[in-house]
Image (tube, rainbow, N blue to C red; front, side, top):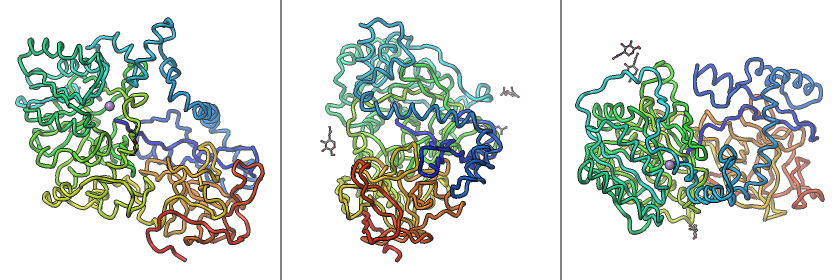
Length: 623
Ligand SMILES: *[C@@H]1O[C@H](CO)[C@@H](O)[C@H](O)[C@H]1NC(C)=O
Ligand SMILES: *[C@@H]1O[C@H](CO)[C@@H](O)[C@H](O)[C@H]1NC(C)=O
Ligand SMILES: *[C@@H]1O[C@H](CO)[C@@H](O)[C@H](O)[C@H]1NC(C)=O
Ligand SMILES: [Mn+2]
């Protein structure tokens, strides 16, 4: 599981005044006030939320002029602490970026940042070796109890809830590849210890072709000992003779299971007290509910438990999972024990065993990792079931520092995402192609055979994706007004692409085309805006960045902000033509520049007829 939290930043609009070094960061506080007003007490994740008065600063930002600048700075005094925090953070981010290639190959810095100061050199070496291999602190894990107590993080009101006396039994399934033995055993031990024994029918371990010696030598003896105590077949082990990936591993586990309810988990978790009863109750009441516990984090370096805010589980348009703010309807109930409606799942879930089969298990045509959790969520909703997260059921899960066994994670996620798009998303499938920046037709990506999944959809008579969007995931932004997307190139230099430049400023640049990250993704809309960078997934994330003519300087500002301020953000553009601002009539062009790394830099100037092309046209561009 690899999920993102909201990325909306407190300090998101930095305007570089007069193109000089003087940077004034303006708080874009619309979100803060909105957020505080909407959500009452809770999930403040960014800490210190600047506070009042900020709306003033926003109101004072018109197109930059020196008189305004002074007044803005005055206003900013009140928000000093937040701005200072930003300024303090900024250089650190730069360092991270500069050394990121180092830290990927040498993760020592991240392991020993908060841990291991008193370790001798030999122990450090061993610890580092395990960390590189597992992506978490296997050395420390080997030295802490398999049944250590962890804090009971359930909200008030969960502890004295009562449940049916005849809840259905569970099979708990763990899937793994080369998991640290102690981490795997802690998952199993806490499942046994913190699930009422009459509810736990069996545990199934799916080994997706591990080659770790530690597992080979010790796992079977643990299983034999446990079964001697709990009865034969209490723990079952399924071995894959070749690596099948996470998706087919979960299905293998399901095939081996026999209890009426199955719980599918990663093997680097710790179950918290009372986790099972609320879930079994909800499934007993309605077998078409697919249920996830709430997740807390086990820090990969110190193994401390970090409480996470209550969240629903959703996805962005690349179909990476992300934690979401629970829906408004949940907050208005003012009941923190109530189930949270969830558009999708982050990957671990509990489901009625037979219902899971009826709705089509997981898409076994997917490879390795990613997308299956989103597909399941969409499918369950569109085909008549529901998905929810329970605040009273809590599981701690290790978010690894890095995924050790998947060099090509992104390629697999992309392929799997396109399968989901083709089968379930109707006309919205274009959004997934746009987010990954691949052409809708002839993408060159082999997504395998999807005919069975399409047949499943029609057999189950499932609802359209538009229904899912408006009823279950209204927070997801949609981009149906996009008329062209891809990378944007100027005919003067075919190897350069328009690029959002460093995150720390708002100045677009021309940079060597790399096609790897969303930094160079361009979206041109029917309302003549040019968006650059990642497609903002939900309304709780920062808005998209729009190209704006700010006193003849190309700048990137949040589109809604620029639009509210009546800034110059609309451009005429036709394939192979110029990019001309509809207000200033000036054009986005390249000018030669000796200082610039690639001999050209971006400018907004009187049009000289330079030509631009974008990779994919969806509809005829407006003239
Ligand atoms: C649970 O606790 C609340 C408040 O402490 C109390 O009002 C309620 O009666 C309790 N319910 C049960 C079933 O014990
Ligand atoms: C809060 O939600 C729980 C779980 O759905 C429910 O059992 C309980 O009755 C609710 N409490 C109130 C006061 O509505
Ligand atoms: C990564 O994916 C590409 C394209 O799918 C493939 O050609 C390459 O062999 C893969 N690399 C590894 C290390 O699996
Ligand atoms: Mn995981």
